[in-house]
Amino acid sequence: MKRIEVKLALPVVAPLLDVMKQLADGLRQNLAAPLALTDLDSDFHEAWTGELLKLQNEEVRLLLALFDDEFFTEGVVAFDEDNAEVIVRACAALRLQLRERFLKPFSDESLEAGNVDVMSLDEPLRKAFMCYLFLATIQELIIQHLDESILGT
Image (cartoon, rainbow, N blue to C red; front, side, top):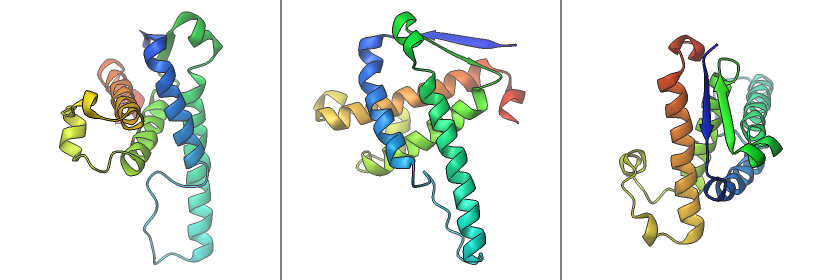
């Protein structure tokens, strides 16, 4: 089984975890990417949305669970075949939420390239942007270093 272990700097990551937890709270009742299907029966739409919301919340919970007491002792998180796909989706949900709630002033191109003057941002916006980059890095690590079959492609 392929496994990635990443050593992270606790003073850098801890404030980002606060942002991630805040986003997770905001996602409990809302999909990161709301369904825009208007021609579905309302009961079916509600049931489908409920199932997606339940799955999204479980995936975000599993991502946050990586940052447990052991993480705060060792500073290491691990990604493997068992959690890779879930973690990639949870990171995507949180990044969508960051984009929607905090990072609207920036173009997708500048966010993806990291072309933002971080030092000119106020602290909440800086934390949001750094969290966005952190989650993107996690996704990239998983995609680059774990077998593509893990991600279902």
